[in-house]
Image (cartoon, one colour):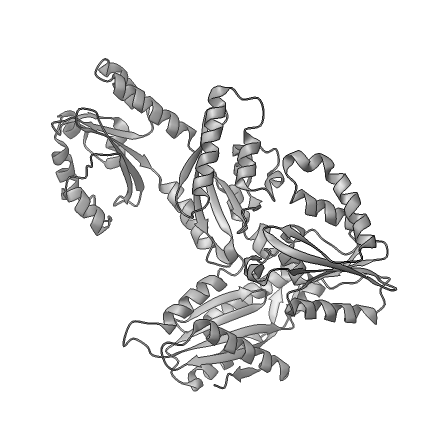
Length: 571
């Protein structure tokens, strides 16, 4: 949280303003102070929670007009952007003369805004959530570490990736996403919803067929964006298609992978046309199948494999001699069973394949091959009997989705699990299977003296200190213990099997000793210490949230006693 004051604010006033900002954070009130020339002086963490568009951009000395301009860019629809400067000018005048609070809605939450003059300083603006029931929906804004740095590896993912707040507004996107939806710069997508992005991609004069496709895409979006995890496809201009897959992330963030499936859709259309004409022109079907990237097998009404293209034989390691002998589909399945082809499959999928692996309707599933590749298998019944089955290698797609899912549960800087994942592990420990409870402890750790390192040496040094502390915590913990980063310079350890307070105190002392050792970063030798609070669960059924709050409160007691201390929560 920046707490720097401009040069013209006295050394006596500045600490008071900083203390006020900290106090308002505790009350969940946002604050931003401006000098007499309407330039930003300081702001608190809650300000960045309510207005995440300012994270990493607002700075001491920034004119209020620039602040407003960024605010409105996150709110205005494309057709309103022409009036941006008028909105900014009106907002500056309202800021200078505001007498009474007013209520407005931002990112789906109603906020009450108040403004008051500060004689000799300038003016302070404050905001609070109008409806307390909505307070939980205000998601923390990603920090510089958790933002661009955290998602940097996604710049090299071939597929489009967009990350949104719970209200659906985009907070980060890679270049592949911008290219797919026609943005010259990916920054142009920030603050928009995916519906806004989709509408922007279809701008221009549309003919009747394009209008139909556009309307069908909007209908698909309206249906699928309400639910997480179900993949869906939407049409794009110039006969392109996008496949969208969602993953839930920490703090309400949502991760959307956007794959350009135009080639696949075109091939599916070719396959459909080829199947319709197959009885009239077997040569056309064979030529089409040979040129397809997908593997294709066609089984007739008698269960005989009439067609198996080279891609299918390569993907499934089927011998050419067997497939050219016109085997039955049962013979092909038997050949695969004999070579443990289905060993990595789930028991349900194995049972389905043993039963024939065919339904009387279109269906699809994925399975892993013994060599680790993942295949997407799709089947379509043929009129008159038989099936048409396609195989596609989706290994790289699955790996990208797994990496996104891993990132959603881990801290991007230290690679420790994040707060959400830690709380899940804590809940599991609190409610084990009957007879499996052996007691555990939660250690809440806050670094002492970390902020001056950031202020004196910069965030890049602070980041390396956090990484080193995380490594020391891993080394101090035992195998089976869980170490997580809770945010900022706060960490937590779930100590399993800690039936006594002595066990937990012993681990805490090891952590204190390890953390306070000197850390060398580049040409700097720095030192931090830790304040640790402990809560012990000696019986099953305890509430995980309560236990974590007890450890957190004990940590603050340790810090108040002089830091580099351990405090055990007393029940």
